[in-house]
Structures are given as C-alpha cells and as structure tokens.
Image (tube, rainbow, N blue to C red):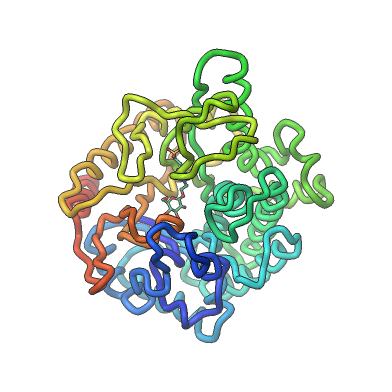
Length: 418
Ligand code: GBH
C-alpha cells in the first residue's frame, strides 16, 4: 500500500512551505480549488491509518517523508512516531524521501539542490535507519520534470518544455547522491520509484513510429538508463548541464531493486494529430509528438484507459532491454480513481493488474513486490480532491475513514496468500 506526505498529511501550518503550497495558493491551479492544508489530516490521525493498514494485512507500507516538515522543529519526530507505530503493527516502513513537495526555498533547476537533498537524506537516515531497512530515493522524477517544469500543470508551474531537462538531471544526480548517503548510513535496501509505461505507436507509419520512439525515450529511457546503464539515451546527455560524465558515475550507483509506478500505456503519434490529453492536460502543439486516445477500453474516473497487459508488456520489455543490468523489480504504485464505496470497478482493475504481474513472473521477470496506490482517498495534485484512488474512503468534511469494498477484497486476497 502506498501514499505520499503532501497528499495525506495536512498539518501544513506545522511545517515550512513547499512548492505545492505556493502553487496551490495561485488561483486556477487546482481544479476544484481544494488545498492540502488539511488533506486527510494523517499527521494527527496516523494511528488510525496504521490500524487500517494492519487490518488489511499488508506486510509493507510505502509513505513519503516531507522535506519541508523535516526542516521544521519537531518534524522528524512525526516520522519517528509513525515508524514506531508501523513496526509495532508488524508493517514494514518503506519511506520515499522525495515525493514532489520540495521546500519552497529550493529549485531543481539549481544543481545545488541535489547536494542539499543528500544532506537531508543523511539526517533522515540517521534518525530512522535503526528501524527502516528499505528506502526509496525519489518518486517519479519524470512526472515531476514533465508536469511540474515542462508543462506547468504541477508545482512549481513552469512551462519550460525542453529547457526543463536540467530538472531531470539534477533529480537523477540527487538520487545518486542519496544512494551514497544512505549507504554511508548503513542502509542495505535501496530503490527508486520511476513512472513507466509502454508507448504504443499510433500506426506503423514512419512518422508515428519516430514520434513514439521519442516519447519512449523521454518517459522510459531517460530516467532508467542513467541509473541502470550509466548513460543517457540518444545523445540527451549533451543537453544536460554540468560535468555529465562525472555525474553519471554517481547516478549509476547500484540500487538493490528498481521501482516501477504503472498506470497505463500511452499511444503516441506524429505531432498535429492530438486528440487525447496527458493526465487531463492538453499538450502544447510545438512538441515533436502527440498523444492519441487508446480506444475500445474502459476508462477510470480520471479517464485513463484500463490496460492490465500493459504492465506485463512493460516488465518484459524492461527485462529484454536491460537484461542483467535490471535488478529485481518492485511495483511501487498501481491503482485507479473511481467514485463510490462499492467500488467493483477498482476490484476488477486491481485483480486484472495482479494477474498481469503474475504473467510477468511466469515470463521470468524477477518482481519482488507490489504496492497499491493508494491506502485512502487523498489530495490528487492538480485534480484536488476530485479523484479518489483510495481503498479507504475519506469524507473531507468529517475526515471519517470508511473501508470500501476493495479494502475487504484486498484483505481477503492477502489472507488467501498466507
Ligand atoms: C502518480 O503519478 C503519483 O506518484 C501519485 O502521487 C499520484 O497520486 C498517482 O500517480 C495518481 O495520479 O492520460 O492515460 O495518458 C502518476 C503519473 C501521469 C500517470 C499521467 C498517468 C497519464 C495517463 N501519471 N499519466 S493517460
């Protein structure tokens, strides 16, 4: 089961500001105008939430540590309490060290942010490392670069298009420096959570194939290959700032496993034919590709197509591409948004994706874990509170938690495995 700090904690007044607080305060940035000032109030209700995890019977919980909270007095105490509570409940804590809530005073366009991240990681590892065995450095640097800095749909709201590439490089560098910092603190089980999905060409026409190949490079290879192979794909390294060759040595610091967040494939064609949106966002026409609708599929509440076999395809493609260079894989996020407490559509989605995962196992891919996004409904970034990904319903007025049908179903699936 997985969550992230900014999306569930609330208690925004009890920590310094992040880029998301600044972004959310600007009118029109978040669709329903909601903020994460309170969110699920997990900061004050974490005991209840840990009890929900224990009731579900999961053996691990992926959450994120808020850098702005750690910077604030008493902030680290919260994660100390949370980790204790999880350990007491028999649930293994798996913290992600950055899930998009950058301190508002920092900026990924600046190289120095990577070094600052490593300093912060050392502080967190020094405090929690006696009880935390497994660490995740970053969540989806691809989406943070693309949505936050290239397209402006997420914080910090920049529309730099390809001038956002340094943001990718600095996050990757931060990842490598964090791996070093964690190793120095004695950590033995380290991974990253990268956003990946198969890219399907809109047709067999050369222009569509070329556009799809380029998109695949941006979403998949750009963030996998510096880590797994120590190299940027297709000459993209020449566009990166700094001493790229030296940085790549840091970025390629070995990880113990490779985390994949999977939601859906993307169908891509030559520019101009755009008839679909990327995560609810119309793409600018000047990009060298366009995103097309995947037809004939049910869609989630978000409008994303349901394509379970895309997960099998993604995992076997990675295995074929990277061979021995690919460490064991963990699915660090998979899930869907739907309305309602009797969420049979979510059950069908999860059931089909778990089967797709088994198909990848049968095809010989070494998959070691599966985290559902998400434990409970939460602040879904630019969508506000409108998209509900939780197995537990949250009433944002009363903050009452109510397990959905999918919670009971998943509990039974886990029980049957034991
Ligand atoms: C993750 O990002 C985040 O890590 C998490 O915080 C978030 O709450 C969760 O997913 C749910 O959104 O329009 O069909 O082409 C996911 C990034 C980017 C994945 C948009 C799906 C578009 C699918 N997503 N992408 S589609």
